[in-house]
Image (cartoon, rainbow, N blue to C red):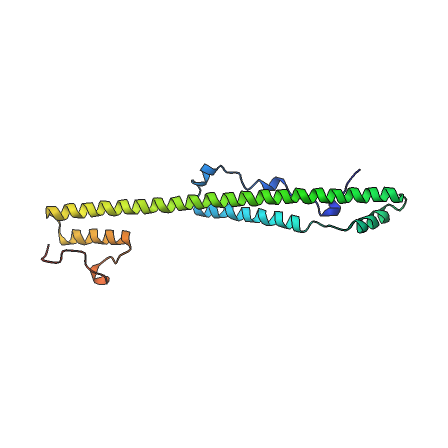
Length: 188
């Protein structure tokens, strides 16, 4: 029996369901944030396409299918018409199950992608914080070494203070607010 899929809204592009997963998970870490965002948006689009393909699959009652088959083939017997109508109904049900499976697969892949992207972003934030803390510790060490040696001018101290403040998000000059972290007694 030949079945006309065009009568049921056409086939969903199954090749496209997996096409937005051309990466391996390790490659995600090398992608920029805009690239990761584009990848997630592509995945969202595929989820929407799978949802629409499932939602808009035309379905009709067996009686309506029998009426349509009878109208298209008036020379057939009643048994032949019922047989063709049942075949068409079975085809629609198979297509529905197929689209449901595609929807579940695409949704699962999108959720997995989002989980891995979130891990990549979290790792980047942790790494940035670690670098900032290491830079801050290095500057503090330099300041302590120079203060202990006594060979540092007030201008050098101000420059180091501004670098440290920029790392911590503090005012870059004591006159701009906040307390001066410098010595409380005497001049340098």
